[in-house]
Length: 351
Image (cartoon, rainbow, N blue to C red):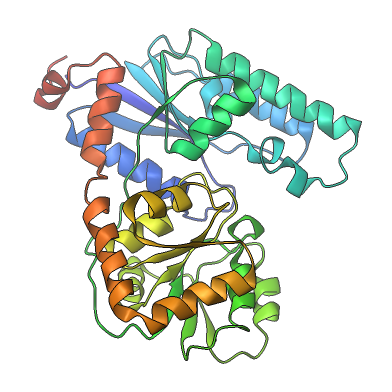
């Protein structure tokens, strides 16, 4: 019988399908392809108050996972789950108590600071517990954050996208910006940049989120900016294919599927120096332009690519070649091995 593995997931209360949900689907599919019986075990964490957060930590701590041969935890507070064969593949901790604390709580009092200290203390104890035999992270941004705040070492293991069928078409008459409309993604930077862009180019924005109304108001009556709302995977591929470039300028992003999907589509990424993993990947792949996090700097980068389409194509091709090395098969095999399962035996279905 195949080994039975639990992917401990934190579900979204809104039911919105974002990067984390696609990550779970991709991980489950890849593990099953390696011969293990992977099941997503999820719970919805309650972050409505600090007491609710602690209750969520306890809920994951008390999960009954005895029926599994191993578990893979992924994000806060899932890594509190207990199992003698536990590997953590960390997406991120609860970032508002970590690197985004000052942005979320610019006037934090001592109560909030104490809550931050307690969350980090609980997390650190969980990561250092013998309950977790090995810790992987999705990128260098998360690795460095884990070392800085928790004093815990980890190994980088890139995830892949679940989208398929990427192609590169030839219109190149707009910019495509997909993703969640949330302040941490800084979509406002790109909207404000359009005021300074000289090139006759449009900005197509897809996705939904908490800040959708504010961003639409910020765009005002600028006819060059279009909000597409939620779009299908097929439309996502099509919009990537015809774009000149993909501006993706989040603040200290953990990984950023948007950048990887742009690379797969042969599109250069415009990102910012403080954008985290997208900036690291864009630099490493030589697959786009990296600028300061200001509207003027983003506008200059947009104009530069519009004025040099051959450079845009070259940078996009660099990304396409490098992105091909990021695949779920390698990731799944590393996790199966970390759980102490022989990859060959797992694929053959021997218990």
